[in-house]
Image (cartoon, rainbow, N blue to C red; front, side, top):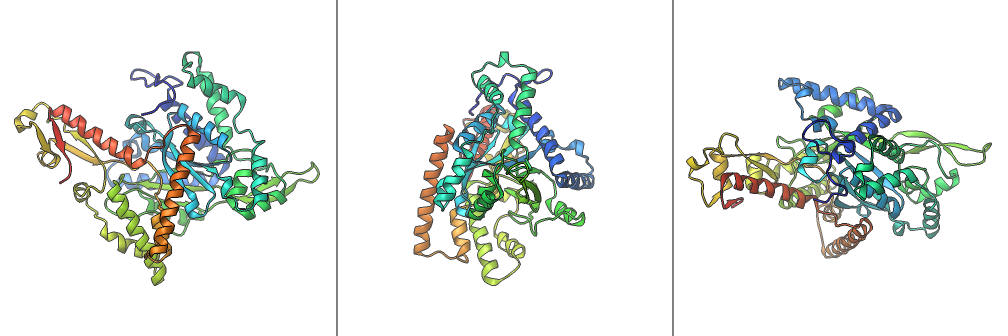
Length: 485
């Protein structure tokens, strides 16, 4: 996997070094969470609800919060929107210092937003287990702003914004050139402190109210990106064990919760991601002007979100998910039925048993040789090529679903199909093909901007599964372990 700086601090003995990427990432997310809790008190209330729900859930299992893996309690994801290619390039460099790299391409043009982006997150299993913090990061695409006047206005304002201080750029430069021996714990503190300023909320806009309203009329996200001196984080998301209970808890405590939970319906075998949130806050803002003529107004952008993560699906599993989601949306619109009820009915077609999901190749799994089986592998007469089903049946190997580490997927096919009530005609197919071709070109443009390929999240999960199978092969002395039919 790629790495921007040497992994010098993954201390197996003693305290991690200040510039260990995993350690930096953990310190950063802890500081970011505290800052956001201060800025958005309702976020703190949401975290309290999550902790209460998780405590109750664990107590029903005879466990406590201390029994959860450390990554679960650290886990957060955030989202930011950037304005320029230079900002996107610099944030990529900053995240790399923290061991976070682009995974997956998201073309938000398909849902009417003039943005595209990626998720910056750890890629190796070791780093994911330590802290899987991820940031959904998008950048404005001026070419998708319909008004030439507004496009010129937006790019002119953004051209003067400086998100990254000279000291922060200096620290990033030093880290990238492997000058870690010259970087101190105090330098690490400075990196975190100065990085937080990029994500900090500012209640004073950098533009007059008239400019803000002009940009907002073009698109609210254009105004949110262009009109403030920082790329304020617009939400931060803890993970929960029971999102349905959190949704009920939010409502009971008076938080302005969304009407329903996004993602697949509740299942015995959770897949992908389910999420809900409280609605964006209307916040007081002072718009630029002369000292005696500043204008007060409001802006809506930041909210609190919570997620429950399931298993990573294969390409086959993703295709089935997309097809069923499109079918559910089409049915609920066509029949004017409750969308949650229809979603549950339609997703009955998606297997809800781990063994069936594994055998049908719908979900990725991590395989491990049972601890007590390695010394007696010979007793099982294992040699040459062996099918994984046999190893599992005999208890030589165990497996568990791989956690989905990314964001809710959406596809052009699903969007077009759902908008047509589940039907596609020749014209729609041509439009879909054109949209997918445009998305591929946009992806290449973003990769050029970042200076690296953006791997598919599905490819990374496949790699994790494949690596676990190879490890089993090596431990058992087999030439091949066969998966599938």
